[in-house]
Length: 191
Ligand code: ITT
Image 1 (spheres, rainbow, N blue to C red):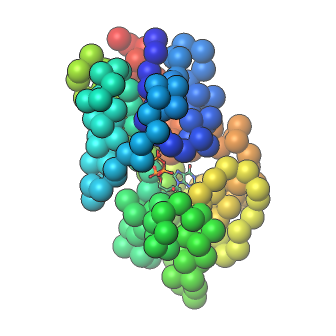
Image 2 (cartoon, protein in one colour):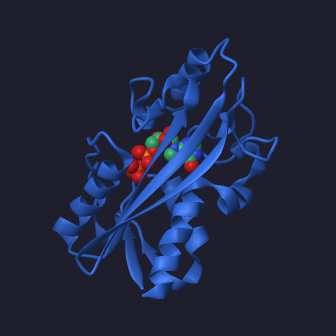
């Protein structure tokens, strides 16, 4: 089966293709000749995931899926949430985003947070949603060099190391995206 993954984030593409394995041939946006910066202006993860998947489906008429992920911090009433990519103002500046988050949490005892991923799939012209959550907490200083985004400051529940210290293989067993992709995979296997 061929599926387009509507993302411009190379880390995500790598993570998801490692999880899905050989059964699904994952095509990148580049592979279908799309170089657009797909708008994600909805105010929910579900809305953004659907917006990205519909954008590709309407223009390329292919089966496809997109994900949207947010880091929801309890002491900040769920922020940065759907605005995780541009929390510090400039989109995709992970360093600035992490520094802002650490500053906002400075002096706060409650460091609880969760990553939530929503996947929107369009298959045979029908839309489906899947989600995955991992609970954890925000540490006080960045640790580790693998992964991307907020990985260096997030420790998943039951672990002592950050996602960036745990490494890709371990992250892919327990992460928000892994859980959402597993739900997608189970759905595809049933069909
Ligand atoms: P798309 O092209 O797929 O939209 P993106 O990088 O904009 O890629 P999202 O909107 O889904 O991705 O994610 C928002 C931000 O949340 C992203 O820029 C990262 O900083 C962060 N993020 C997403 N997934 C993450 C993960 O697994 N680990 C750490 N940070 C993550």
